[in-house]
Image 1: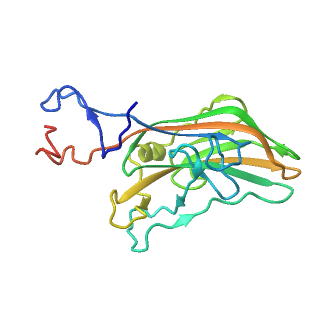
Image 2: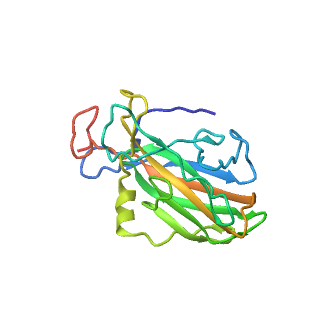
Image 3: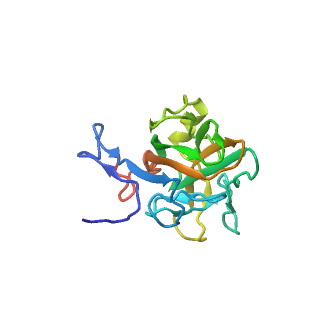
Length: 235
């Protein structure tokens, strides 16, 4: 078994130069698995809590930070952490659970997979239409959405809009590195928001499993702009 971490992007192929170069980007994957009955942080399937989303790339799941999108505007104070909306307390409202993934800025999202292993259930109330949003912030749909989750299996994403295609082709610079001066300077964030509406009375989630996957490629900004080793040699 081996593991390594290094700067990307990763380009592979047999011929890196010339008009017939066959170099392509490597597909990268981040995942997060939820089990709504698991309420212990730092264990497999931990699904977070009210006003707390999880970060699954640090296996096992631990609380993750959501940042206010900065739209590429640098701040000497660093990025701003924002909490997801808290669960509603009362006779009707929403329960929110979700995951955050950090990608290289300008990445190309190739696939978004949302799988339901167990449809959520709740005690002491009735669940309405469950939805999932995938965006660069809490409850966002900049990348994709699922209009209704009612059965086990791979969920069908709503038809993509042109704006979503554009967003997927190059993820935005959402927040700067929390350590000023450390590389990389910018990150993209992909946030999965599960909205579980309830009626009659707020209960406790008694079941529910979700599996989130993002497949993406890290773009190379040198292609087309540099032709000298070590940053070029593409032409």
